[in-house]
Image (cartoon, rainbow, N blue to C red; front, side, top):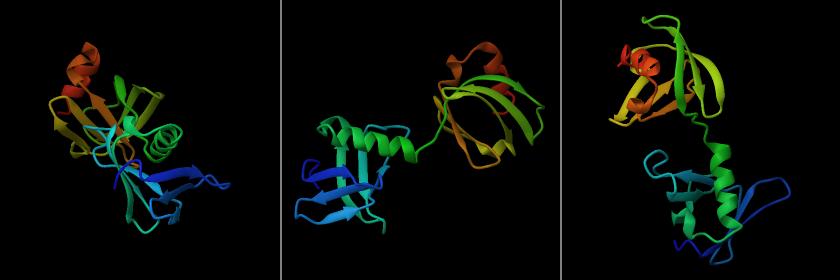
Amino acid sequence: MNTMAFDLQRDAFGRLVLTDAQGHVHVGVVAVRAFPIHAPDECVSLVDADGHERAWIERLDTLPEPARGLVAEALAQREFMPVIQRLKAVSGFVTPCTWEVDTDRGATRFVLKGEEDIRRLNHQLLIVCDEHGVQYLVRNPQDMDRASRKLLDRFL
């Protein structure tokens, strides 16, 4: 579907409302990224409550305002993946253990249940999953400070 072939607004309840090119109104659509880590500004789908795709957005920067802002806001509300910037401490090198980290959203601590909860996506990306299922992203581990790299290397 052409990215310009729809209208997007919020209703009085804060839900996204998409009106497609045929004039059909879809209340409560959700924005979903196809590639949230590798291409976060490309390939976004707007799906209805039943999971049916109602619009496809090839690139977010092709959307006019205010639709671009509405989609970006919806994506931010739906996705929560803090980026680990620094490992301050770990309670031990045997899992489960508690990690104290600085993220792009502030300092936090979480429990790493097992080494299998650290997944390498490629040489520049890791995903660390805590005991509650919250996923943390590590971009370019080699660019972290020396102490952080040393702690992280013990688990890889």
